[in-house]
Amino acid sequence: MSWNVNGIRAVIKNGFTDMLLIERPDVIGLQEIKISHESRGKESASRRIDFPGYKEYWFPAKRAGYSGTAILTKKEPLSYKEGIGVEEFDKEGRVQIMEFADFYFVNAYFPNSGSELARLKYKIEFNAAFLKYVKKIEKHKPVVLCGDMNVAHEEIDLAHPKDNERSAGFTKPERADMTKFLDSGLIDTFRLIHEDKVQYSWWSYRTFARDRGIGWRIDYFLVSEKLKKNIKKAFIKDDIVGSDHCPVGIILKF
Image (cartoon, rainbow, N blue to C red; front, side, top):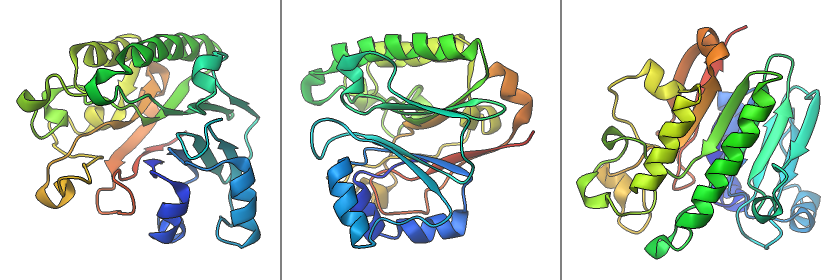
């Protein structure tokens, strides 16, 4: 599974631990954890951050209360790495790479282009560096990539496409980069299984969009072409609340 929790402390207060007990994911990638190692240690001491049965890997941003990723896994990985080797991106705690027997599990929090598209250039540069890194490790083993990619790829992936053609997450450059990911041999698992299904993974807090059914699908699981036969299910858990995003997931069978 994968979930942009929009602050780990906030989502714990809203039932995150119960979700783990109910869904029991083997591995879950979290984005936008918004917590430092130091703060997490203080929270853990008070038993508020405790996930029995899971090994925890945290990669916070250097800037306090911003960005960051984490992976919780039941099975210990063969190896674990933080970042793609580009300090400009790695300082924001955006990418974790975990190696298992059959694949690399990559947890990523893609930059948001931001208000007035102020970070669009930064995001496009991140996309290029990230894809280059993914294709590099894919030479050794297939990749399972999850995370908040901060882009709705096609018009089916958001409620009001015409009104958002110049909005962050639906600009032509961002959508073109998503096409590059798919053209490189990565498979959008949800769209593979649900070709015409309209379902969203993010809703704006500001406009009560979730209550009104006005959302975007910007959280993904992409997998290498070699794993296509292993995909048994792809889903969006839009009944789970606690963040402005909901969890997404896949089931792979080997």
